[in-house]
Length: 256
Figure 1 (cartoon, helix red, strand yellow):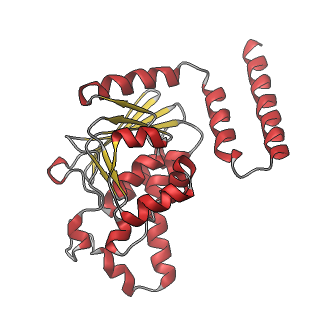
Figure 2 (tube, rainbow, N blue to C red; figure 1 turned 30 degrees about the vertical axis):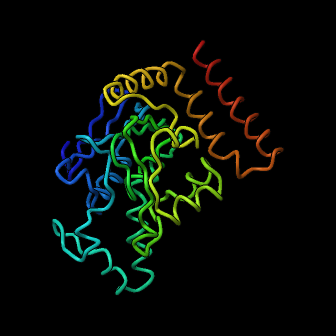
């Protein structure tokens, strides 16, 4: 399916999201975010891995710069026009934008970002929305929003802190500096760094490895890990017991 600068496909247990605006380094628009949210809502239950990538040499240069500069792009109003609307309407519109990213955290599947070239602003946040990041050695990350007088508002702040810690996350955001692929690996932003020519095969190998365990085991494990930081230890132990009881019952049922 082609929609709003995206290629969205489902092939059995693997869904793919390809940002397909290479002429503008896969710059994003609110229409793309709405399409992403709809795609996430419509995923069939057999999907176990979602791969997110960009067409061409860049993952994504972030929000289409013309929208930041006050232009209308493909019917989308300039970003700053939101500032003239009532607060509850602004909150609702941003929540709709965030939905295009937050579905990638759901425990039913594992999401993988294949990142090369630029991952800036919304592009950085899209990579952060994914569970895993396979990064080409030419990748460069930057959280540009503060440099524009804005904040990262597409769900990227929490996973960034979880991955690199508060102090480093603040430094990366407040300076809007570039984080190169090697540093991304050292900080924990990148799970794997490979040559550009190896990116596709590495993502394919990782996808196959993620599909090997039983789907229920991966789903329950992801849910446990997602909630671990927010639960007291005793509650985490209880969550593990409950998850294991469900797994044992399902495995026993499959034998019958």
